[in-house]
Length: 100
Image (cartoon, rainbow, N blue to C red; front, side, top):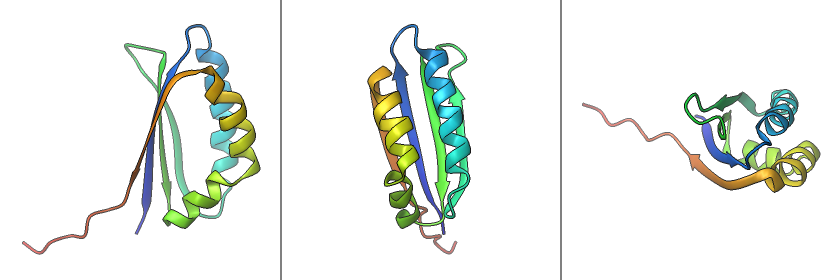
């Protein structure tokens, strides 16, 4: 079982490199969390102000622990969020497979 989070950020003009540097630090810290399976930062090829995070955790509780971490508060909430025009976060759980 896994729990996936996809976040789409729209960065304020001129802050793309600053946000990406912060998210690189966030990714490195998040990958050290016990429940983290994957943390990838993507930047739009046509629109560099679009940043998408793809995160995978063992459980929803692992993601909750991630959100409660000091590095999440410091890097995302305090540093990245003020540099964003918008932020959308989607939480996803796998569907149960149906026999054919």
